Image (cartoon, rainbow, N blue to C red; front, side, top):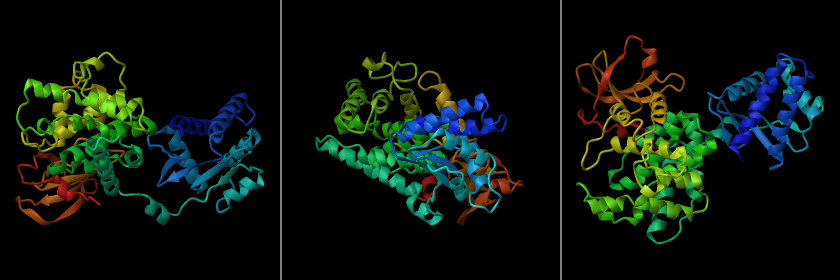
Amino acid sequence: MSFELHQELIQGLAAAIKGLRLYPMHHPAIEQRNRTLLNAFNQLLNQQPVLRMGLLEGSLFVEDSLFADDNPAATELVKLFNSLEIDGFEITSGLNRSEIERFLELVMNPPAKGEDFGSAIQYKGVEHIQVATLKDDDELQEDKESAGKVYGKALKAINDIFEDVRMGRIPSADQAVGVVKNMARLTLEDPHALFALSLLKDYDNYTFTHSVNVSVIALAVGRACRVSEEALRDLGLGGLLHDIGKLKVDVGIINKPGKLTDEEFRQIKQHPTFGAEIVKQMSGTNQNVIDIIEGHHLRFDRTGYPEDARGRQISPLADMTAVADTYDAMTTMRSYQNPMTPRKALELLRKNSGTTLNSDFLERFAHSLGTYPVGTLVRLDTNELGLVIAVGLKNTDEVKLKMLFGKVGEKLPTPYILDLEAHEAKRIVGEVDPFIKGIDVADYFDRK
């Protein structure tokens, strides 16, 4: 089901409701909006007999599309559902213009508080729109997988795919497509929760964790750039598979700690082409995913590799993945480098902005992370040290800290949570490198 059609539907419904605040039902402008709305419904109902839309933990969904809080049409409809005190609607095939008009009239003049909106719809003769009986909170909580569980499934998916490639089999993308769908949903709901797990670095299984982390970070970049949920899924899958071609390169070259020879680097530069060839044979992928795999080392100025792809039209999702790939590499411990802090990594990334990396994508990503991104160890004006474990969705300067060191530099035996917004007497004065303090920030995040 197309995200764009779902987007058209919520825009049409929001526009119809807004228009009725200015004009009567049979004004030409309203009649046109109602025709547009009916057309949006029918396009979707021609593909399936029942269409569900409503609220999931406060966010608007239409079928499998979840809309972020900064979408104006979604915000309008969230207010509608809340004002009507309902969770959602089911719309069935056979909906006509007369029913839409009666439904909208009831929306604009709802029954008195305490009266059943569903019964009012039926009384008005609206047969093909019904108040949906959605799952209760306990059922939703059971269905909703935690960020840690989804991250673990992503690790398994990429492990299975890589194992197939090693055994000479054409891998299936079905498992990866399913887990990326959940990753995209989590990213839309709360990008910082899943992003925090990209701090988990398993150095013994670097290839797997790097693949998953690039996928997670690429989703954060995509959300910051406001791509559609459909594009987010392509971005997540491409990030997960971006280094699959390295399986066709000698493992001794891949794991070499020192500087590569010219011949070794020539072989490394073939991995995007190898990867694209593998993914073209996999079901469940598309040209966006192939572009990500083939183009994540092309550089924004297209002076990178593979050389034969420089002149091609490449999806901008490849440039978003390049931001994620570079960010994860910089913040990861390697045999030849200590990990950079998130702020230091962003500072260095900005020096490559406009050449290696797309400056617009990078700035949007950096802005979404906030002044002190999740995973940053900070010093307060009281000399205490705390780890940023959460960043506000609407205001990224509203952070929660896990306090690790006290006022005289002592390591706290039991860390505690501090909501900095609720303690105006305390403020952040700077960043501290956790490596210097002997802190592995991943130890302080829930992996479950």
